[in-house]
Length: 551
Image (cartoon, rainbow, N blue to C red; front, top):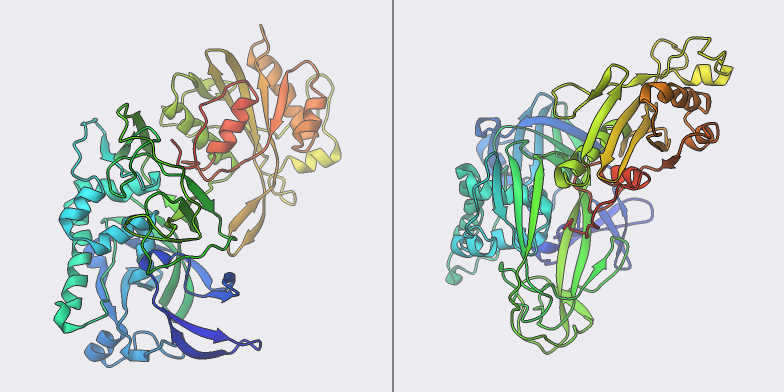
């Protein structure tokens, strides 16, 4: 890993190098600026999203700057655009992908970000022969056949998001061939011990074929040529659906660090702004705590649906061991014997779900909850005055318009401010806002959820579009009243209150309602899941608590 000193005037000093474990690459992102053992800043690069095809004829096998110069006589990365330590002689390989927006170059080690969310998966793929990989990633475990699903048995350290890669690795010949080739190439480049070759530059490219999107931060080297230095988002195949199997043992017994299920050792989360010592050249030990270190999150732009089944193994594995020892320092890799208090370090990059807007996120979150808990969320339909419609239809959900005529039934009329607010574009009063109204129910509760359409407030170059921050509204279904009798009044009060749900509720004294906020959680499996859970809780519909990893 190469570093350069950054001076106060913004100029860069000489290159210096440091050996780091592959598992630490998520912390040492390209362009990160370090001071006093903490990454305080990042170089701001342009963010671009590329529509690409991962069919092999659409991307070129990775090559280095040195190979490119040898074959063409030209520089792959001009020194004036991005200076490399060895210039045109640099041997680090880059992936070259064609798209409608031009050519995209990505360092192969950075593309490893699109493989495992838990860095232990990436360590296994680059460290062991194929027999060990199959065993450690539980690819040799028998799984049941479920029509319409790819079933995958996950190792204990894998996150739910890792199911996409591991399912492809189990079922797809292309993925098997490409991933198996990584270790083989490393072994070939290093050669026998007698060669004393210390360096290998593996080819790490797409692990599936077909259309994809990838979001990167980097810089334009020339018109139509972009160097993606940091991957911030990517897609995985949208089908078929994936079903996860997990097996958990009681929290007692031996904690061998392997792909087999085992009792979870005591763990401690280290967030992105915390500091903890890591010894890349040390060996973690039995009996110490496990530190789960947060790598920068990454956005999963599109993915196939995932369902889960966690089974509890009733057979204890060995006798209860002593309490875990607090680790003074931790290290990734294989667990060795006890003795020096070195903890096990796991580097995990959370999935940052791609938001689709408040309305879409709420609807997707509700559908996901029903798919996971059909026995709890027994009713889910979007409402229109022509009737309710099930999400299982192919129709897109409809919004109820807030475009009221000047005079409303009962002699009411909107205020001048509200009349302007109800339009999506106030200077162009042609498109009124809509409200998504969803009927929900459980064996013990029945109600409606209201979510108003928002204007785009701004478009941040780093975080995308930002919507107006309105709350949503839930109302328990009043006994004996059809929804067409009372929902128009709710819509009127939402419009008159300009989307402020507490104000609207104050003018609806006969209805039992509460407002709710949009919310997010690192354990969300789809964007909108926490918001939907929060909204339903206001109606008395609750679900089993989820852990950090969603079980």
